[in-house]
Image (cartoon, rainbow, N blue to C red; front, side):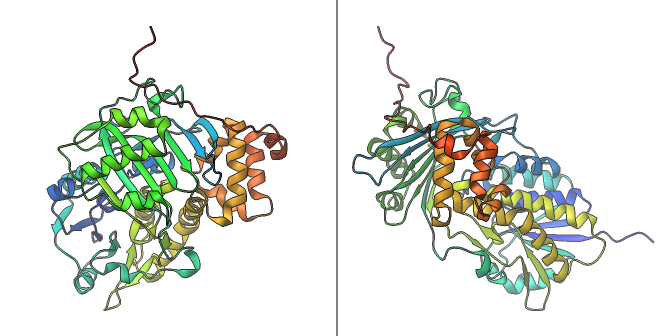
Length: 457
């Protein structure tokens, strides 16, 4: 007797949901993907959900799922430069300046609308079914009774209520930053771009910390229509001038103006590049502003009739994007679930779904959440931050180890042990952290960009 084909249902057709649906269909499940928007609308009528930069491990998760990694299409990011201004001092000293390659991996940032669109097409090409409808809890209850495995990759339409916040795993009750993102074009990615920061130029992303205001990031990006481009992402701390500025824009032109004014007033070392970039006029949605409360939810929910359903990606855990863990965790979660479901021969009941979620929480979510707290400058990590960033100023290897947490955040879990972060620095530097810090000197005035300036006669 032939074995029955198992069925799967994925609610939410963003990058994570479309990737999971493709992976399940490819693994032999008859899979249905449901979106409240049609495929064209998903591509053209909404903004990208952040830069969705992937580092190392999450790129490998895409490969495991059989997906395009975009490494041959997107501008590849090979490292990062950092600038830190001490805003607590009246003179606002320019305190830290360092640069390092990513150790053993690269990163790419690709428009989530492009990824979702192409992955839906690939999913349909291998026999998957896409339905366009709005799924509320009562409808999900009906659908869950007809499918073996149900994944919820969206918290909209009340579906988030199926997965209560886990207070024991959630450190915050409110957003820690106001975020502004704008995608811009007009600059390449050669050594002449951001040359004042690094010899790698446009192959490195650029991070700036202004301690009393927030953080800002420039990164190579692949836009759905404009192609290779640049993304600007900035975070304003609660109550700061930056938060006020990032709340004000209501359209692309205003968002772009906010980026320019931010550079003129706070980030003038990168001003020449900021002024050389221009908006993507054909995509008025190439910007966003918002705030996210970093939280962890229960990974398994029950519909009204008791059907067990699993939270996937952002429906399970929400990260502030400062450490780049949201899109990465979603793809890693998708690959983890596809792998586990393919190997499982029994029912996909609540016990199984919960066990799989707990395994993934231990493997990734917990560490990614703590790495986000580290990059947010959470008070629990104040001493660790001071040591790591100070040491990175002296030894690029420490900077590389800190950047490696973007791909694999698990070393952060050892920071709660006595002197855990000191051991992290010692391992990276190959010497005692105190000896390292004894050689620390402040950066002094940062080099300003001369991009576009006329050559000296």
